[in-house]
Image (tube, rainbow, N blue to C red; front, side, top):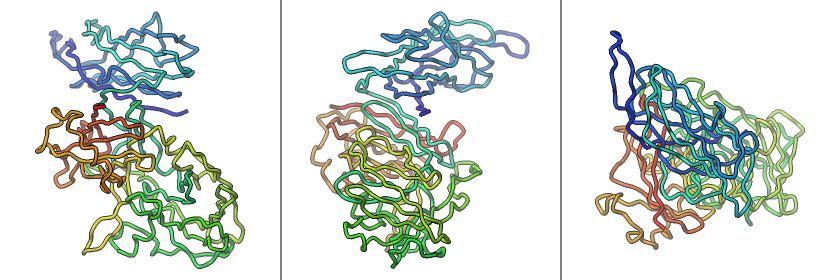
Length: 468
């Protein structure tokens, strides 16, 4: 079941009352509540979170009123904890910084229907004392209602960065995908191109001279990336995002031109987390494959095997125009769900195989905390410095339409890692980004965090607002 995270962060003041060691009542103002008054959700389970600004002094509960519109509990949705008498009571432990509950969307809305569920904080109790809360609510929409402003904390999963997260700005929906769950992406447009998964550390491919997939091959330790060797740049897709830059050549209609490739599957997600503000990106080797890709009518045929095998398996992969790419995994030897439909995402927060300069040459380098724009479906972005105009003051009148058509805006790294620095580790507060999606909606967007309250990497947050 797909899981979506809805981080709801903007705060109301609530007085949490607890007892100290002498049983003397104390009252501490604590901020808690929802950040966004509305969120669109996809079918499946979503996690809804209410956040406290300081740790709770004792265990307690948050009570929320539940108001569905054109929905029936048990038929159209369920929650955990369950709804009783149109209320949810959600427990939290002492020292908790947040409380969550699960929302399971069971049905869809059809065009023209309005379906939603509104959750309103009505009380917070601490150590048994019920205390009224200021009215604060969020509404979960079954219909895709345009998001005017939003705060997003993509679930990249901590300092091993286990997840790529795809964010659709217009709906506010975030889709996390385990970054080692797929290996090859088959382009669904007019060209016949295959991409490799640059979110996996060391993933790389090398074209061989042969077209015989059944010849035994050997590992080639030179086929790797991220080692500051300029020669390694040819073993990965060009990070700009052009289809002409894929490490695997265009799949030719002339079958004899389609060579075998040696595939270094790179590294697993690290089994151990990092300490302090570091990241842990080095994992166990995932092994090797040999592949050959040919055309099958208007589709693809992937042939693949282990290096020492003299026979191969194959699968036909059909193009689907709703997607940029269809993904294949060697973990399952099947097509898998990875990148959402091309109209359903604008930004991807991920690890990323990029180029960097070393002794005057391009070398490959593996980045955490990287923002990719969906340029293949027409998303464009450009940077604005606060020395020119402050984020708060930027309006649609400040948008420069021509900036969306510059080469920098067409590069999927238009945001990239430019929003943060690592020495020192911090957000660059002197800049923000203007993003235009494929439908023409324009947003201003700025990053607000790259760590959680414990200073662990892999916890990005950003906010954005619709300009037009």
